[in-house]
Image (tube, rainbow, N blue to C red; front, side):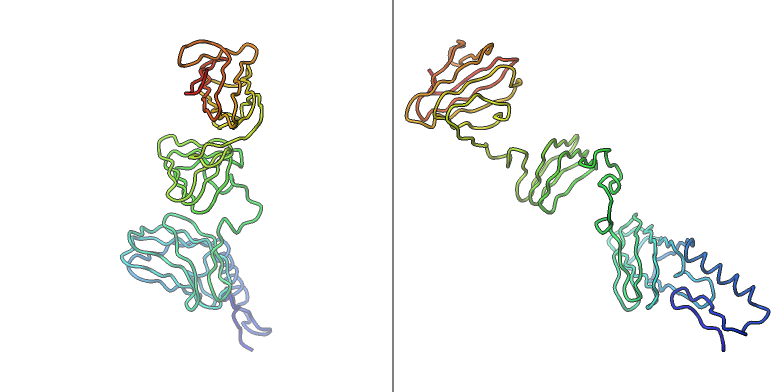
Length: 310
């Protein structure tokens, strides 16, 4: 009975009683083929034509390598094909220059994937198609392990440019380039762009208080203001108190008198509140349906302004 060859790596499967005196040579050949399959590296120029990889019986073949690097400057769309029926894992390195063209890796009769210039790709052939293994498919990987410049905190992304194509929620984003939100981008903590722009081409940019073009509204009866009131409109029906040691310079709160009678805006102990109209420091009265804005200008020092204040 003559030798046969394995389905995937084309190793010679020697039959009992065959190849007398040559088993050592043939076994060494098989070992070299296995070595190529698990450690082989080959660069293949794909610039000028499509390439059909080969997997030949019992001989070194380019399709058997573990790592394949495609090279050259593409002059048209190029396809590299793997023989049908081979089941094997590959690392594909796209070392080509694409220009306006694409490079595809697939089986002869099945499907595959489009390579990304300058990137490495994990993939496997299941005998019918070539399947790309992307980062989104890998289990138990933190954000830091995926991003080249990942911070020690898994909630932080440090990259050159960020494009959001679906609704996204995160803690902190730091970008040296542009941050673009295609739908909505929600930041729970900080967003920083050191040199570029922050742009929402469609949808909203939101922070912990909501969409940034909206002024959050809080309805209360009486209230002692809290630091969380910064940037909000407080709709009140009774006394508002400005407390000490709560606000920082630059923070503001707007008060709306949502009643049919006057309400008081009072200073807490140690608080100075100057009226912008006269410069006097005193408690103020806000007339019915009136609006006043309180601006912190220093430690426990505020300026209040509004057309219906007395």
